[in-house]
Length: 68
Image (tube, rainbow, N blue to C red; front, side, top):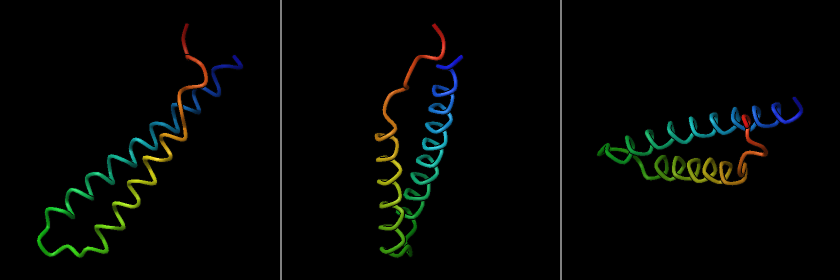
């Protein structure tokens, strides 16, 4: 039982970060496609995307396999 909690927390954090990355990628793509988008908003979204990707890399691999 001691292994399941850290692994579950890791999966929850990973899913949250992956969801954040998906939203930021969609926003970045949409801002890039718009003709009248300003460069500051595009740069801000790109920076947020980079931060989210760094968080995912910092999370690292799962501490223990949940099953087996």
